[in-house]
Image 1 (cartoon, rainbow, N blue to C red):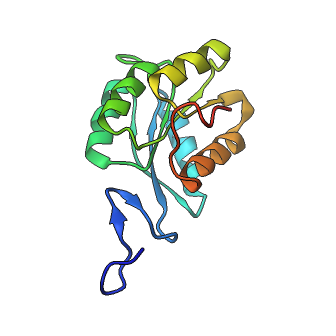
Image 2 (tube, helix red, strand yellow):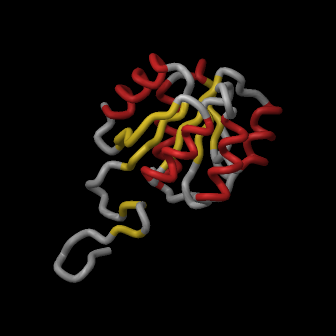
Length: 151
């Protein structure tokens, strides 16, 4: 869609022009892991990391400030875990897909994640390719209701 004058239309903060990278917020307590994930995501032409947070509480504050297109959350973090943060994030910005990238993936985690509004759960031991695929699926197909894209 284009506004008068030929410029791309931006609906909220979700870009409708295919050439603009999608903005991703990373929320994980490991600074080293955040940096590695940032390098991986930014090596993808269509993805851009707009910010980082080290716990769920900080993630909520950054999300309000930065308005990302998608948020990647770890489960186990100090102050507020990923499930708790997801519950708050879904109330604040229900249109933004949430991906949990965690070492604790399993059937119970997927049930808890779905209940909190998380769109996809990816195990860290499945590797980064699975995460990138999940992110692209959620962003490329537009946001769908929680649980519709559970891996």
